[in-house]
Image 1 (cartoon, rainbow, N blue to C red):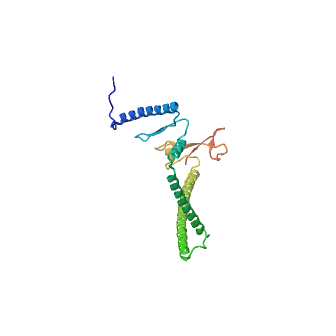
Image 2: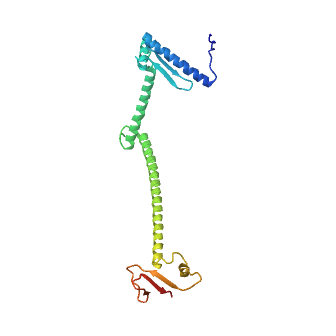
Image 3: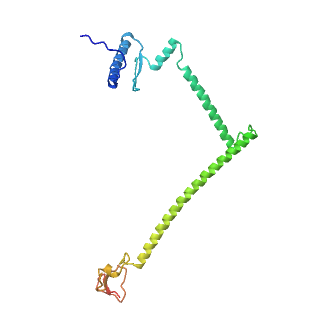
Length: 227
């Protein structure tokens, strides 16, 4: 059964267009390879899809550059001459800019001043003054930032020092840790309504009880009445 004739026009459906492109690209590359093998031809195909993807075929016996060089030689044209001249012109401009910048740097360092007239020297002097002004402003800003940073560190250290002093004073006033916060001894001892004011303390090994305290034989618990 004969196939229907396909009308050659742009395929509107994107999916169908990509499928057709892929199939026909593979068929074209297959034919190119057959020409290379059967006829010893040098074939190069470069294709770019509608999505921007590059596909190419080149005969194994030659490179793309060699094929372009052969094309230029056969046709008698220079494909690279225009681009080469454009690149050379760009290179000359960059060299001029680089040379001017180097000269300006030397002049700002006090060198290469013999060729400058009075107006140029005045302009150079003004530029140097403006540069010094900007440098000083930046320096003072950096110094100011450092001072603020050091002030914050000093305030933090002072705060830590005050807290340590408060903690030290609290321990001096309450060496046994009886009262951690403000309150009376009754609440600490568990006598909120008052009661026997008897206190038992465990002394440290190196702490000897006073003569008016009564302790049991060999015990480290000393009991005495609170005044």
